[in-house]
Length: 140
Image (cartoon, rainbow, N blue to C red; front, side):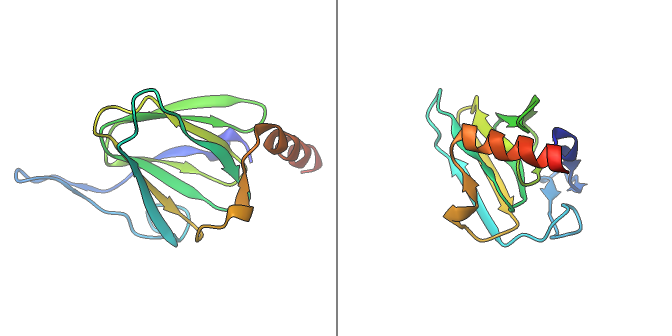
């Protein structure tokens, strides 16, 4: 995969003077069905989360509260996204390295994943990921 497959997706926003509402429907608003939802919170200042790529799992990240940055890397190029609206999320397909940093106080990173947790789906070492990513790009 390349960074061109990653994108910001705007979710439905129903505005109301008593509070807005946003919803996500599997396979309708994001390009996959999700099997797992998790969230990162109480991240200490200066901490970096993620630091991995996934072999087959698709993910969608959004700032449910506060803000944070997501650095994406396809093994050749890098791109940074700043997430700070609860109705915008970032779609990340498989084989994209990600690091999450610059968490604001009280931020919550909500993640929808296409698969249940499987440790074997992770590239945890950047050099291993780059080798696989570059080889796949060359072989198509």
